[in-house]
Image (cartoon, rainbow, N blue to C red; front, side, top):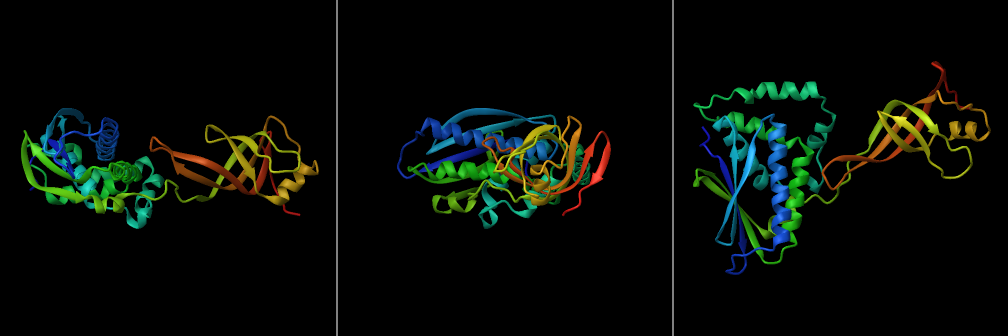
Length: 298
């Protein structure tokens, strides 16, 4: 069984004997750690509140206490966060297929994965099993934001010259729980992702309501309405583009195209997936006034 814990200590260990930390660095690191707590709890479907406790000397020690109805759930979030922070460096220093898989899981599949763990009904008086902790860590590892937030944290730590190492310690009512986990600065780069880019989404089949076509030669972009958003996109289907430039395609306010397309994506500063470019590789059909006509290449 996993020992109870309700708080986490994050210890900045310095190369000198000082007990102060740069305010901006501290606030930026705390932001990433709090966001990491948040992503862990959201992934596990648990509601928690986080309190910041007064810091302590010894280098510089930060403390966060979790509040909730169930002490086993608090222990779970603390334990998973401590493990994620210190055990798993970035694989190949990019987001892995395992993490990217989380982007494609629909809500029903995620609910089924959570249902297997049954975290909502962990008996408060029975404690937390090693098996349940392991399953929870595996689920959280699939969340790309967890790897991304951790990468941001270690990027900031690498840039802070006076730091020697960091140490993470679980606590229960201000008493240490289990062994601490320490990472020296030379290992920090192992936890950093080298790119915010994500693999392209290929072969997407969808329908775009055309708002503004490019009807003149050149590298002009089209504008349309797709998946409840206005998008600009490249028309990469040369045969269809040639039809448009010859004036063979009639556009109206009811005109749409059924397409196979590619989306180029990256992670923004808030950790959200953003589509940076959409490329229409092939126009499958045109639709006007509800009439669908398959497009035939010349």
